[in-house]
Length: 459
Image (cartoon, rainbow, N blue to C red; front, side):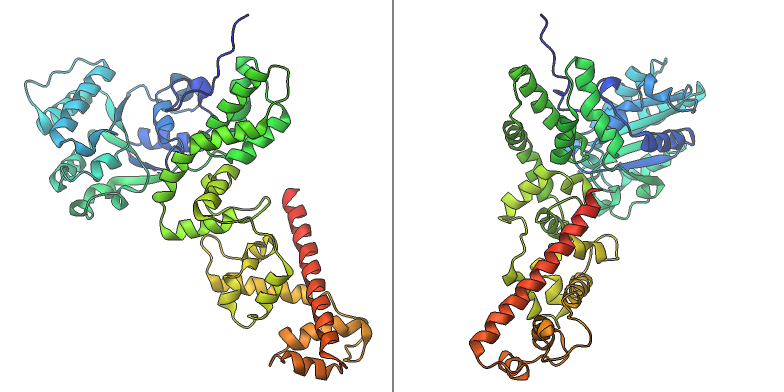
């Protein structure tokens, strides 16, 4: 009996069209730009699939999915990951060799070298009725290398009528370059395309189809579990699927140990997580720390990272954080600062899903905006504790509401002894017992509101 081969084992860019899933929207945009002879800067985080997209552009099977006629376009792959320490002469020599090798056209540089050889080869390709397109992966290795000065980029720009550039980088080129070329007009010729996580449908295809083709099926429960651990990041999905597939082969018909699979994947992905974390700016790190402390399904500001259970686990481990679990003490601390909107926005209650749902702004959210949402939620929970009829200080069914009203929510808040006197308590001890009941009642209402929100999100 033949042993099944794990289809998820490739750690690098996809080599086969069978392992390339989705990306229809970005591919259509790239092919449209190519036939329009535009220059494109493909931007995306580490391992999000930039190299795979560039490589897939050359697959005939992928090209046939679109209506563009690419017969007169020469797509030339150039890998620049080793160019942080090389020179422009190295660049032109390597690029000219790759053009000659991949184009299969009769080309003769006539003994020229460097910029002259590059320009001559482009002329000859154009004269034969073709338009070259350089698919340059890791182009930020060039822009960060001080050996490539303003003159180099000025020259590349001057050749843009004869050749199109499609570059891949972790950030827009003008933001990942050395100081001498920050204002280079070269960057102005590019249209930026951001590579985002896979769509939910694409992510599901990546999880299920390779295993099915290999003869081993992932159950619906397996698929949902993988998607929860990895989110929609293609590299995370592939590595978790690799370990799940391997464990299923090992167990045969036995039960799969998902905890073992999760821990193996986490151990392997940890250095990748750390590399990514160290290159994030402070604001993105703050956002991810907030998101790592939240439970449940919700909209994520940086979905390629924080939709992954494993990445959120990494952030908690790295920053020594805990998943948020609201307590009565948390509620009391927030109520003591209810007039300070910024403090509310920095409190533990900012992690409540019901608070997040009420923040209207997209993208990074200021503490004041979160604080306003916290106060709105607290006020709604408080109003749900109202008694019957008109509020009276002496009404028994208004007692807990009145304590919270005078102590926290009423303008010109009263101190505890003044509240006790206002409500005619005979002993301070009894007042504090009832105040604890009032805080717990408010806490329970907040839990009910949060549970209802979580239920809505799961639908």
